[in-house]
Length: 112
Length: 118
Image (cartoon, rainbow over all chains, first blue to last red; front, side):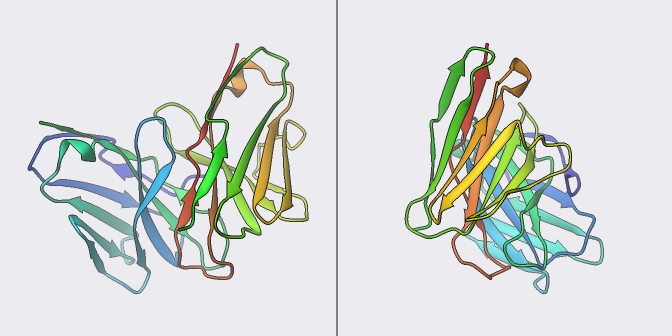
């Protein structure tokens, strides 16, 4: 089953612009994670934010989490052509070792 | 660290063939691995949870006799698509946690296997 929706489904921007992707989920969570997938490849973990955190940064990435609204956002600042990929949010349950539930993903295209 | 290797990366075969996909944790032990399926332009759907030394746990709607999972060691899980048909064509990805008992860690993914059944 899937956890929720990502918004937008597709996003096209120019290099240097910021890209914001949103994710909503349905159940209570232990953490929320964002992954990146280049076309035809596996997933690369970007950032994990725990349910008791509200914001987290990693390089050009900024993730926010609002547990009251069951939503998260991923901001990529100063985007580059190499950021072109699909981005997925995934939620982790409280029980250790359980599978992640993925959102539908946002396809980001950054043109130079 | 925490590398997951998946093999093969691409398989093309005739309808009716059985195909085995391997998922290995290269630098850590994984008592649990996960198998996902992804259709073009869609998200990952969990197929099953593979448990070392015991039977896999399949998600609703996934045929266990069609998708055989074996997790015989702490570093290897295999997914066998039996008597594959064109509708089984998809991208299959495995993943694992590097640390057991930690609910706040990322999963590590293989590079996926693209299966095309003619």
